[in-house]
Image (cartoon, rainbow, N blue to C red):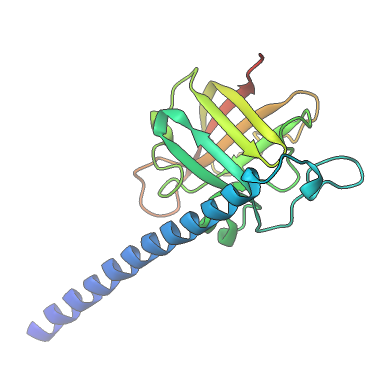
Amino acid sequence: MKKLSYLLIVVGLCIVAYAVWEIADTKMQTSKTLDEAKAIVESPPSKEVYKVEDGTFKPPMGEAVGILQIPRLNADLPIVEGTDPDDLEKGVGHYKGSYYPDEKGQIVLSGHRDTVFRKAGELEIGDSLEIVLPYGNFEYEITETKIVESDDLSIITLQNETEELLLTTCYPFSYVGNAPQRYIIYAKKKTV
C-alpha cells in the first residue's frame, strides 16, 4: 500500500512538472516571436514585405508578421501566420485564407485561452484592438461577443465585402482539457 502511495505521488509530481514546463515553454516561444514581430513592424513601413501579385499580404506559414495590441489588457501579442498547434504555441494565429487589414474582408485571429487570450473574457463592447503590421497600424472596436459550439463553422465566412476582425479562442476559460465551445469577439475598423 505504501508503494502505491509513493507511486501516485511521483506520477502526480510528473504531471505537474510537465504542465509547468509546457506553460514556460509557450511563454518563451511567445516572447521570442514577439521580438521577431517587433523587428518586422519597426522596419520602414512597407506592404512589399510579403506582397503577392494581386497586391495582398501573404506571409509564409509559421512566420511572425505583426502584433495584436489590446490596450485594456495591456497586452502586445505576436501574430503568426497559421493556426496549427505549432503556430499557436508562438502567439496569436492568423487563420489561413482570411484577410489582412485594408483587404476588405474577414480577418480571423485565434489563440489559446490559457496563454495569449487568457484574459479575453475581460474585454468589453467598445474596447479597442490594434493590429500593427509592416505596412501600418489598424485600429478596431469590439462590437459583439458570442459563444458557439466548437464545431460551429458558420463563424468563419471568409467574406470579402466588409472589413471585420474576429478573435476566436476556446471556452469556457477555466475549463480543463478540450473545451466544448468557442468564444468569439467581433470588431469593426474604427473610422477616422
